[in-house]
Amino acid sequence: MNNIELSELIYPSLPHNADEFEAMYPERNLPEGAKVTRLGPSPTGFIHLGNLYGAFVDERLAHQSGGVFFLRIEDTDDKRYVENAVETIITSLAFFDIRFDEGATLTGDIGSYGDYTQSNRGDIYRAFAKKLIANGMAYPCFLTEDEITSIREEQDSKKLTPGIYAGWSKYREWDRDDELASEIESRIKAGDPFVVRLKSKGTPNLSAEDTPRHSVVDAIRGELSVPDNFQDIVIIKQTGIPTYHFAHVVDDHLMRTTHVVRGEEWLPSLPIHVELFEDLGWELPVYCHTAQLMKIGEDGNKRKLSKRKDPELSLDFYRSEGYHPAAVREYLLTILNSNYEEWRLENPDADADEFEFTTEKMSSSGALFDLDKLNDVSKNTLLHTDAAELAAWLKSWSDEFAPEYAYVFRDMDHLAEIIDLGRHDARPRADLVYARQIMDFISYFFDESFKKEDEYPEEAAADAVEILKAYLAGYDHSDDNEQWFNKIRDIATNLGYAAKPKDYKKNPDDYKGHVGHVSTVIRIAIMGRAQSPDVWAIQQILGESKVRERLEAAIGQ
Ligand code: GLU
Image 1 (cartoon, protein in one colour):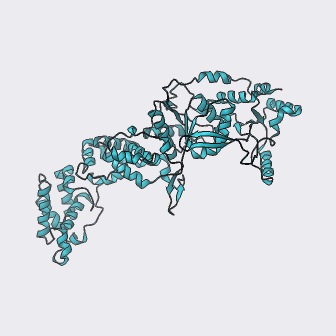
Image 2 (cartoon, helix red, strand yellow):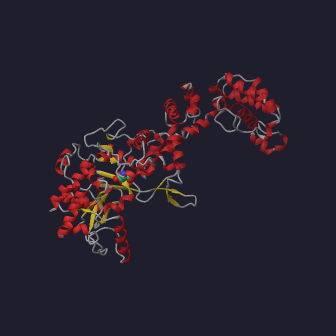
Image 3 (cartoon, protein in one colour):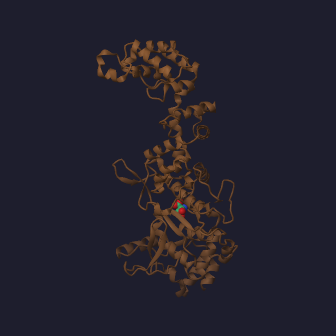
């Protein structure tokens, strides 16, 4: 049996051979410099901020250069598969306005470089594995778990690098041993389980100085010096499914990916990928290994975001709390590119897409994620979002995640007015952060959620009913802001309160309190809380009858 016969024995009936598959994926017809990127999430049911962070890089690189960004579902790890996970990936990314040009969608593939789901590409991987076997660059390996464990123990005791490589799997040299060759032949025919391993060309266990190295371009980290691989890594598992390494190389070559954006946890596998690309005679893509997302932990030290400890790692968190996608996008850009914030200050109203994103300006050490900072960015983003648009977006959020707030959306014009409150002042108010917080912030506008949250200030509590009665008696909805405030000042002075806080501070014994205490009583009667935007403006939005109704209710309590 020679190599070609072995490859035929293992894969007797594939629909196409490697060359035919290769011909089905011609070079893309794109302008010079156009980048082709892909997002390759695994359907584990958990889509996280790191996916989104990478997706932004992919999306910007492709769309800034007139290239293509596609979605590939990487479901080769059958143990991790979770029902509906693909839908979750697609809908979560769509929520953040990640636009793919090609790839898997909820209604099937778009594009001519598919299939875009790895589990449907089995024959393609097998065809390339077959080619490697036929060229003597890969071999079937029948080592059992137990055998591998004892190999590892022996390697440990000899202080050798663990793994299967030259000298450790007898199946590697099957062609030098006729007996072994016929054993392999009969075991394949009998259907015994085996994996296909790369027959690495690297020399094992060389000293650091003697290890050959390859120069690889990483657009974030600069030129990397990657050591030669010598591990006979598995390319096709017992199940016939490829490993990540093999699927990555075959797919990114065939799909003509120019830039592979992925997490830095893949850096240690780079030697393997370099060898696979070389063995298959393909050009390496430009790698972009993104930094881990870190946060400042409870102890003040930087640590990786963790699925268990940090709900904010899950994209679902942002959707269900109702972070506006533009805010999350804006925030991610600030951590993606160090010069983004400066650009934003100079271009406050520009579309974020006008910023020229570059991988060189990305951090190669941990990117620091900070929820407070996101909230700040969000306040500013929402301030620049049109009120009617924001109202419509809040409604779509509520429809999906918080139907209990349906009453907020009965009158969309009214809601837009509420949202706009204080946003056009000389110093605009930026109180709105995310949907759930907004629902709470505006809750006093609706009878369904209005409640007295704060107590009347101590200084004026005893006079509360009298203050409210006087205020109601003099209430004229058509008063302007100044007339309105003058009336409150009159009530205050008539009842023994200072007209100005500073007068009270100077001579506290001369007064019961000051005008602020009086107006807080009114504020609490109408809004239920001691802090709120301008009372007069709120009254204008609430309408005269609602204001009177709230005052009467508070007097009656
Ligand atoms: N499926 C891989 C993951 O979820 C993607 C890595 C890559 O983009 O190459 O980690």
